[in-house]
Length: 119
Image 1 (cartoon, helix red, strand yellow):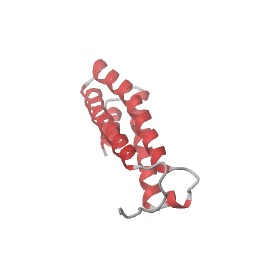
Image 2 (spheres, one colour; image 1 turned 45 degrees about the horizontal axis):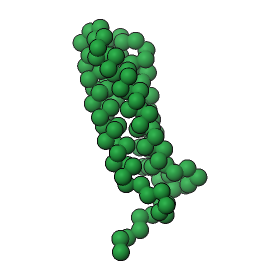
Image 3 (cartoon, one colour; image 1 turned 135 degrees about the vertical axis):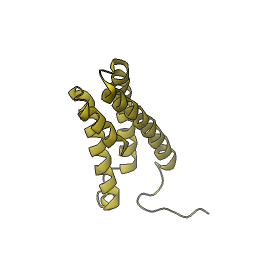
Image 4 (cartoon, one colour; image 1 turned 90 degrees about the horizontal axis):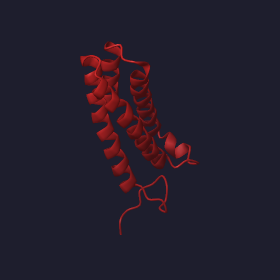
């Protein structure tokens, strides 16, 4: 939702294409991961360790968001660009939190697909 709000702010302010494209890309990738887990495709496509792919997505998105949204806040051609940059920085924090929580949760040498009860 935060990526969609950032996109709307950038689109309404007629910001340069990089700002809008990054917000759209992050919203689309987030929706794809949501549907992947919702439809349980991660269990059917077990050849890829999906939680780790989600961590990499969050880290790479955070790096892009850091550069682009700081630039948007610094340049602030109008209020829409400034608001989009601020929402992008909030999204940056959420991506970092997501990456840290997922990385702490995954187990590289544990079984995939099922949660084993604690002994």
